[in-house]
Image (cartoon, rainbow, N blue to C red; front, side):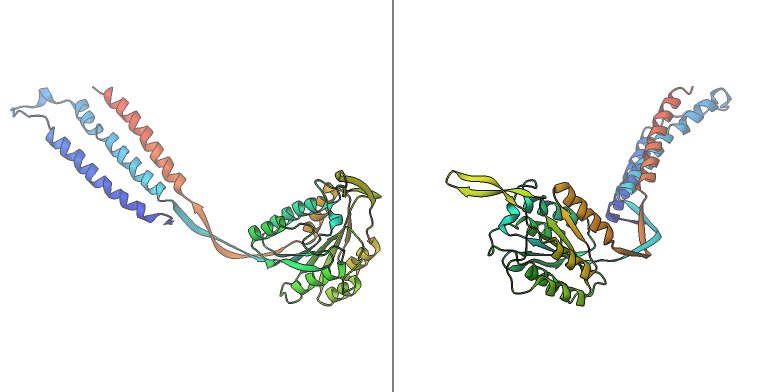
Length: 327
């Protein structure tokens, strides 16, 4: 057994002056005596028992104070041993930030929903290194691989459209994500590629980027974001921003091919709920592996001392009442 706050045990020394003060008061207040030839008339065994018993409440109070001090010092035990070794997964989230992600078929819009649900996904995987890549007409790394969840979430919140040239360079986005993972030593490397359009620019063809991912044993899960048919887009007009329905175009055969070639899976998200289900499914498929060894598991022992203190205080009250009733 050891203590979290051992310096508090020095308070036990306060019991010494408390005991000395009690004894001094008892000696000072000792009753006068008279010498007689025969003490039989004054012999009273019940009275003697009362004189002895009246010290018990003080002893119980000292026990309670001592137990409270020990409990406050937080005693702990490390007799049990367990160890968990976690083998994390390296994941890069590649997110489309083209202006089409402002469509309002999601709440509040596609990019807002993608960010919110991705943040929940990041928070649910504390043992993995996660990075963020964004792409539109070009691509760049928003965050390298890291286990710093606070930084990741803050960087995710800062993602918005209009920061880079517009367009949909799926190949560039995937290639940048692969570049972040290719030198990783993790046994499992994953890219989650989210887009709502058709590849229409970029120097690297999506299929070529998929082949590179396959070479480095990187699985790619692709997500096509957008309602079926048409979706309301905010459009600037002489009367301000208004919503106009536009046709949703997603190159599903391409996304299916990328996922199939790399050992991943293609998903289609048509609303917030479906997108959340997709991330949950990926979360289940990419389980972090864990092995158990041994390391100390601490047990808190303060409760037993707190109960001792409580029992001593209750007994003190009972004894005081009982002593008063003695003859």
